[in-house]
Structures are given as C-alpha cells and as structure tokens.
Amino acid sequence: MWDVFLSYSRADAERVRPLARALRDGGLEVFTDETGVESFAGISDTIRRELSCSKALLAFYSTGYPEREACQWELTTAYLAGLGEGNPRRRVMVVNPELTTHHIHPVELRDARHASADDLTALVRDVRAHVGRLDGPMTLKEHRVRRWLLGTPQSRPEFLGRLSELWQVHSALHAHAAPLVTGRASAHAVQIRGMAGIGKTLLAQEYALRFEAAYPGGVCWVNGESYDASVHALGTDDLHGYFDAIGEPFLWIVDAAPAHRLAAREIAAMAAPHPLGHTLFTLRSRAYDALGTPIDLGPLDAPHARVLVGGDEALAGAVDGHPLALGLLGRAVRAGHHPGTLYDRLHTRGRSLLDTLADEDVTGSVVRDVDTADAADVLRCATALHPLPLTTDDAAHVLAAADRVPRIVARRRAANGVRELRARSLLTPRRGRRLVTACCDPARLAPPRPGPRPHRGPAARGPAYAVRPPRPGDPGYAGLARQPEGGTHDSAQRVGADGRLRHPGRAGHAHRGAGAGTGHGQPA
Ligand SMILES: Nc1ncnc2c1ncn2[C@@H]1O[C@H](COP(=O)(O)OP(=O)(O)OP(=O)(O)O)[C@@H](O)[C@H]1O
Ligand SMILES: [Mg+2]
Image (cartoon, rainbow, N blue to C red; front, top):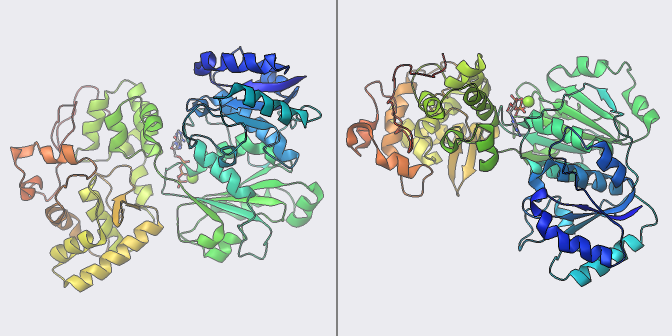
C-alpha cells in the first residue's frame, strides 16, 4: 500500500523530484507515475490500480497541472473517492508551487493545509499527519459499469478547456442552496446557460463522464425538447418509486430545455423526479433565475480557442472564441484551407462561411429565437459595430437616425431590444455599461427573418458606425483605426454604397476587400 500517490505534470518532473525524495526520506511510501500517460478517454487501469492502493493523492498543482488530462482524472478520482466517504478533501492534498492560487480547482482545495512547497520539512510533517489519520486505501467506485439509465452520450475527444466550469457545475450541484420552485425543494439544480453553440451540451456531457462516480444511482440524459418521450424510455410511470428503489444519488440532465416555448414552472417540472436527484439543465435563456444556480457559459478561453481553430490567433479572435465556429474553422484548416483565406471569407459578403462549412444554417440557428423587432434591430446595430462594443445609448442613436423617431421612442426600443438580447445570451455586458455581441459570425449575423421593419437592415448599419467610431481601448481598435479602405478615417466612407460596413482586414494577412472572388484553397 502507498501512503501517497504523487500526481504531477510531466513538465514538472524535475521540480517534483526533491519533494518525492523528502517524502520517502520521511518514511512514507510514495507512488510516482513514471509511465506518463498523456491523454485519456478515462483513467487507465494502472493508475486506478495504484490509486486504489493509496491512502491519499498529493497533487503538485503547478499552473501546468490542470492542462494535463491525466492529472485531472487522477485528482477527480481521488476527490470523488473522498466525497463517497463524506469528505472530498480526505483523499486529496495539494502542494502549490506557484505564488497565486487561482489556477487550483476546485476552489475548496485552494486553502488546503499542505499548500506550500517552500518548506519541505513542514510539508512532509503535514503529509505524514494527514495519512496517519487514514487507516486504509481509498475506495474507488466500480469501473466501466456505466450507470447510464437514460441516453448514452458518447465521449467527445475534441473537448478542450472549461476546467473551472466543470468544477463549478460540480460544486453547485452539491451545494445546498438551490431549492427549486417545483415543490421538490430538496433537489439540487444547476442551469448551464448561454447562446447557441457555446458548448452547453458538451460541458454537461463531459461533466457526466468525468464525475459519474459521484452518482452511484446513475445518470439520466433527458432531451428537453422531447421530455415525455425521453423519460418514457425508463419504462415506468412511477418515476419517484423507480428512484426510491435505487436509493442512491443520481444525476438528471435536461439538455436543451425549451425556454422559448415553455413557462418557468413547466421547465422546473422537468427536474429530477426524486430528492436524491441532482438536476443539470442546459438552456439558452437567462430569464429563469429560479430554475437553479446559474452557470453562464462564455467564449472558450484564448489559448484553447487557438488550439481548436488550428493555431491561428486572428481566426480564433474573429469568431470571439465561439466553440461551434472554432470547431468548424478548425476542421477547414485541418482539411488544408489557409487560415488567412478563411479569415477573409468570414468577412466577405454572401452566404456565411460557417453555414457553408457546416452545410447547414448554423448562424440562423444562433438567432432563431430573436422574435421581436426591437431585439432584431439592436442585434443589427451590435453586429454592424462588432468588434466595437455598444451601449443602449449607442443603439438608441442609431435607431433614432435610421427611423427618424424621437429619441425617447428610440431609447425605449433600444432598451427593450438590449433586455431581450441579454436574456437570450446574445449580448454580453463588458466594461461597465458596454455590451458586446456574443456571436459567432458578426459580419453576417443579421436577424433570422425579415422583421416587421425589414428596411432597417441596411439603414441601420451606416448610422451605427457614424455614431460609434472606434475609440482607444476598444477591442480591435488598432485594426479598425488603421482603416485600410480608401485610406480615410471618415466614418461615412467606411460604409459601402449598399450601406454595408466594410471590415478593415487584419495584420498578418493581406486583406481582399469585401466581395473578393473565390481564391485558391477557399471553401466552396
Ligand atoms: N469545450 C469544447 N471544446 C471543443 N469543442 C467544443 C467545446 N464546446 C463546444 N465545442 C464545439 O461546439 C459545438 C457546439 O457545442 P454544443 O452542442 O455543446 O453547443 P450548445 O451550447 O449546446 O448549443 P445549443 O444551444 O444549440 O444546444 C460542439 O459540437 C463542438 O464541436
Ligand atoms: Mg445543446
């Protein structure tokens, strides 16, 4: 039996060596994984075997630690083994070799007592004391006995990043502070919210796969769009009795809760049908605070966005870290298309590049739920200005100019539009009152169908740029201020004859100009 399973990233091997030596010199039996399993569809048998012979895991939690998949599996497994015994920190200790702690997840491990690598003597003393209180190795849950009671989501090897969100989901599902408005007050419910394609479903799947050991009662994957048919597959009408008989905590995922067509109470009624259930909703709307603890999913962080898109930073930035768009572009890059060409196509008139790559109307689906004229108009303003942020005032200016209505009327419409877009996760607050479009194809993202006032599409774009010229500190200011087209900074000239905003191109790639023809390597 090992006293300590030392978990560390291969890149830290040199830094870990003195620590391992000090622990062994202190009389502890230490397992170090020398085989270096680098990527996982799950934890390897060897690691499981050694973990199940270990009293506790000691994580050398450097900033590189969370990036190594195998480390996360080791940590999560030991954490869940402790959770099964009633204290998730019982089987996990952390050494933090960094000056700050914000890279450590879950948060409750940040104040672990063994947090300093500076004083090895004190550290060894602490570790000895901790394992001295444990009288046997950790017990791991059965392996490969997937308790998917409903639906079997496949593992998605392309999943990247989102580490902090995975732990946030877990912590929120296990907090005791999320009573539902359903009468099932003891249920724990969490809602992952965000715009279409931002990665809600993938996050929920990955959570279920990585943390299933926390749910010995099983995992149920329910499609929110066809709830009754989904649940029917359990083969019982007495859901409460079904889970009562199982008698253990289970995870109940309601994916794609149809917030656009059902009231809050009806969605809340889709929650786990038994108090032992932990409910995870995914939905686009931000309008249902009472449904459960919200976790708002934003863009993928820049380093992972770059990986997903195939390495090109500008291309990743052009779609605002939107995972669906990044994935489509990344696939095109891997198929041989040049990132610069893709970037230019993204800003060229005509059918959206993303729709072409996906061979379906993905940009339309992003904005399909926008159903009021005010929201559609504000979205036009926001996409015309992108990447400049806008305020409600900016939008009111544009609407007043485009419609020739009094400011007070325009202001009210702008406020209504902003409110609706925020609720639908299509506008995100940033830097105080400024809002940015959380969209994947800003150049093309217009409201889905002609609204009651379709003439305002082109009409809104000219005034949009005129009232809100680029300012220092704006995202993309340098590129916008460079203003290549016509070599002028006169905002009026940035708008083409059709009233359409021209994009200024980007550093590092020759700009083709709007409407440029198809070039070599360009997707059809
Ligand atoms: N963390 C991630 N790593 C890699 N790719 C991702 C990630 N998240 C999302 N994607 C990519 O984006 C696509 C869309 O993600 P997902 O289906 O989870 O979006 P969603 O938010 O559930 O959208 P919708 O509201 O339409 O259901 C995925 O199929 C995948 O290609
Ligand atoms: Mg989804």
